[in-house]
Amino acid sequence: MTPLVVTAGTALSAIGPGLAATGQALAARRSGLEPCDFAGVSSGYAGRVTGVEAHALPHALRNFDCRNNRLADMALNLDGFAAHVAEARAFYGPARVAVVMGTSTSGILSAEMAYARRDAASGAMPADFDQEHTQDLFSLPRYVAAALDLGGPVLSVSNACASSSRAFVDAWHFIEAGLCDAAVVGGVDSLCGMTLRGFGALGLIAAGPTRPCDVARDGISVGEAAGFVLLERPGVRGATGLARLLGFGASSDGHHMSSPDPAGRGAIAAMRHALARAGLTADDIDYINLHGTGSQANDAMEDMAVFSVFGDRVRCSSTKGWTGHTLGASGALEAVMSILALQQGFVPGCLNVGQVDPGFRARVVTENERVGLRHVVSNAFGFGGTNCSLVFGAV
Image 1 (cartoon, one colour):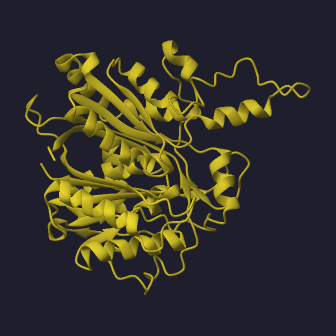
Image 2 (cartoon, one colour):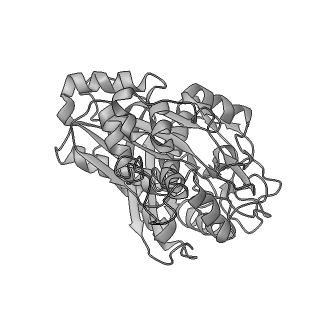
Image 3 (cartoon, one colour):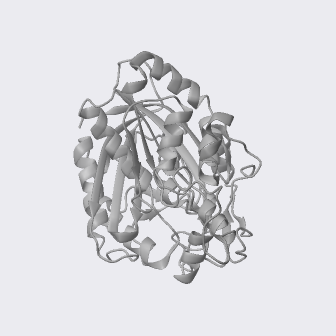
């Protein structure tokens, strides 16, 4: 496929605001997971971003006010990202820059809070609850487009935990089809009672900080995050960029509503398609950022799938021990982390692992390693059998 250039990027999660803080936390092996105390839930650990409650949206966009859009706004103002987008907007024109966002919860916390204030007699929601601008799954891309003053195509992708990885795929198609010249791509998901209690009801919340790939792993830690990149055609504006998007693969195996296909067929297909589109072989990949949620079934499936495609040569790890599983934002956040690994030449080994599951056959790394990286793969596998793999290359 025709590669695209990541000309700018940023991230916000429990380990800090911006690229520098994210890279420093990864290098120092400093987790952002803490005992959960959100929305009345006090079990397990969570990756909570500090400062969200006090953050205010621009006055003109206050009708979009919800935790999810606050996270988005905080991230847009990191690493000069909004300024980079403004330069692209001035070059291409506002109508030629698309916004493609992934999210799974959007502003559902606002709906939860409004429901708690509903009229006891009639059940009517409070008059000040603006569902369209907060809870609605289209709220996030509409907010980002408005905040960045963009007028190109706007798309919301809600594909479970593969949402913001899939956003890269749709953005590439928009640019390739000539619908736009550049795209702001990313994902945001925020903590809410539904996800914390929902994963708890499924028995998927770990008692302590999540331990991806550990023999004694016992579930996930839910996190929140925002991650954004600016994608453009190479050479048009002359920007070197942070990395290149070389390939992608997406599949939907539909094995089960919440459990992965034990044989990993959809995951295998996504990784193989990503390699094929990038014109690369398994031997060209130097690092794989695993989806690696810390649950028994998901990690075992991914190990099987990775070994089927790459054998035991390629270093792989999950970064969810730092941030928790940020759901619809995880694809974008971990794409940014993969780009940081490319730039800085290191592999962040899994956190909190006492012993890698002896049944695993892929090359799981549990300590940070300094390695020259040329090509990396970032995986995202979601509920319902939605799978997406992205291939990034060094500039």
